[in-house]
Length: 130
Image (cartoon, rainbow, N blue to C red; front, side):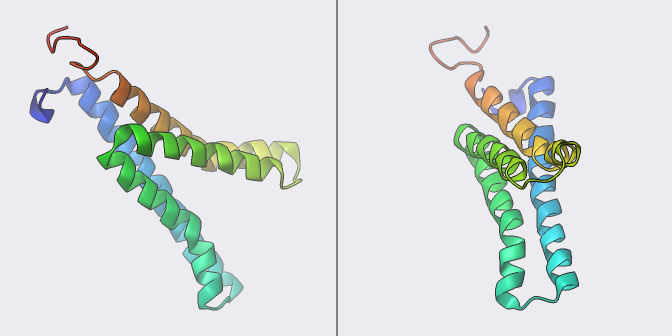
């Protein structure tokens, strides 16, 4: 099925997942830039602070091109964020709140992209009409 003929609901879900993935990457990148500016680190420190955002943006671009692989990577990155926060040793309430705010968008966008790629009409011998 051509992209123009795609169901409007699927097109909206796909677009929403893409926006969430890119927005999460941009958020992490801006956070890294501002955090490194505040801390006054050098070029290497700035790049280290920006690296999560850059990785998330590259993965979001991959997910836009290859939904299944990129979406799975986004899910893994979101879960990895949760694991790192859980190992940080902070108070449980704060860890849960930060994990939900920072990791959840990646998991949701990635899972939605994987689901959309796996339920594509016309896949696995199904006809395009049904």
